[in-house]
Image (cartoon, rainbow, N blue to C red; front, side, top):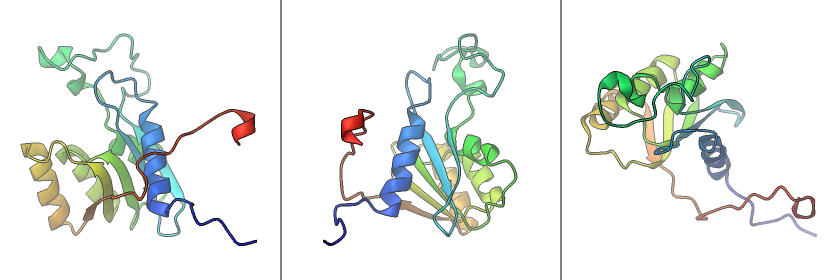
Length: 165
């Protein structure tokens, strides 16, 4: 008997972890996940977009428009920053970060400062915005590689039923 040949790649696996992490986000509009991996393909940390610990997501706003202090933008911690902060002190130098949405300029700063050397993403829907343009400019200047993942499969279905495991 020979080994399976329909297994997923490392890139698909880690992006799958990012996609699954995004499912933890309570944001009603945009759910983003991130997974940080070292050069030995070990997961260092994961994160998703949401409010900081101690900030009740039933109290803080999820609105996208209106007075800045009444929208989510002043309070939400992005998936990339959450993954970096959730790491709890392990060196991230040379790691890759898998993100479901290309990082904004604020997250790009944290990615660069933490020593992450590659960003792998599946969506770049805000490519034309000033924040994403600034992000790419900084990542390029810092030598952080960026690549869009082209997975071999469109979807993977998870099942929690015993007969499927």
